[in-house]
Image (cartoon, one colour):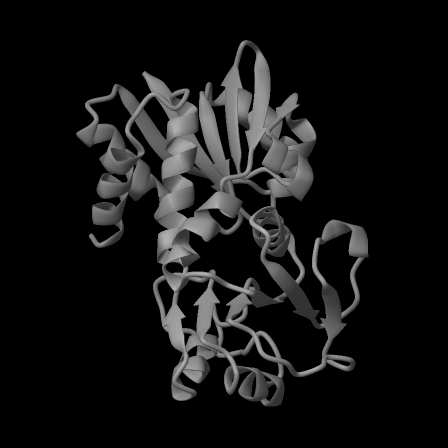
Length: 261
């Protein structure tokens, strides 16, 4: 039996086990996917080995530790600087980042994008920035405070104090604001001004209408949550567990049904 899991803290809310286990069942595989609450980042490698896992998904706040313990890194993981999928084979840890392509698949329906504004400057922003730059999309970052510029590929890095209002096709919330509270990812006066000129709004948070998406809707902006990003990155990770041997559409179909259960 192959064994997989998702590591995080908190982790009880994760629906990854539901998604992966339904895909396992429908593909007729001898495998199981669970969740692991990890208290200390440095325990990740040993916990993985102790559980005899073949692969794992890594969520906050352990993506940098997963990057650190990887023996081999995909191009995306190396460029982004974080790993959300670990595969163990040939006594080595292989690290991947499926957040980036998962995000890009989710925004394809918005069509051609000339300029994007990303709110926040954490690990999710690095993944989003990587895939936007790779596809030739210019983007700016708006964050509460300054960050080291080498982590990002943006045109402009703004803080609330020096932000210049301009027109964006898409505004993305990559922060946790609105996940377990009623906060906005940036000051309301800034978002009001931005949404007057924006076409689309995307929130990496899934399963709820966040204050960010609610505000965008009041301005007539088309909105989308992170559900498709979650499913797409999950399907890519699942296939990495099995050396990309399965039809991605079969995995997506199973995971899409699982998330609606």
